[in-house]
Amino acid sequence: MKLKKRKKSSRMRGIRTHGHSAKLNKGKGSRGGKGMSGSGKRADQKKTKVLKELYPYFGRRGFTSRKTQKKREKIINLEQIEQKKEFSGKKEIDLKDYKILGEGEIKRDVIIHAKSVSNSAREKIERAGGEIILPAKKDKKEREKSGN
Image (cartoon, rainbow, N blue to C red; front, side):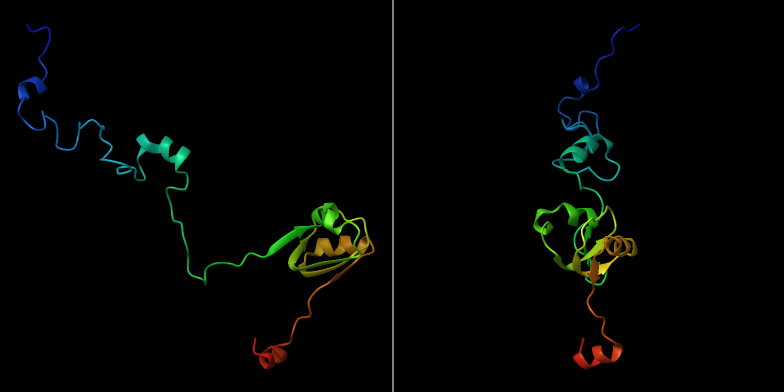
């Protein structure tokens, strides 16, 4: 009875693959090749590298058509208006590109020019004695005349 079996590879000297398939056992394991090859969706052996170093590796990215891209409007909360130094001594604040949201409180009576405002923000500003001024909306006929 044999106690130790001889390795198969020792009997296969001179044979290119030494008893393994052409891809496996080439010193890199069975990861698929060089670089990031073999790091597809189910590549658990490379998951730590991908997640730590190359985070947005999987999934879609890049540009979409202009129709599907939503223009994100700028927003600001009442507490930010109250805290910012640039607004501290002013009676009128110009935020024409912003939508005003009602998180926080405002204690001063100020006049704010804004693009739009939430209902809660409007109530809080008026409660403090302030005023909000929104851009005038054009009628359908006026828009057709101006070409917009």
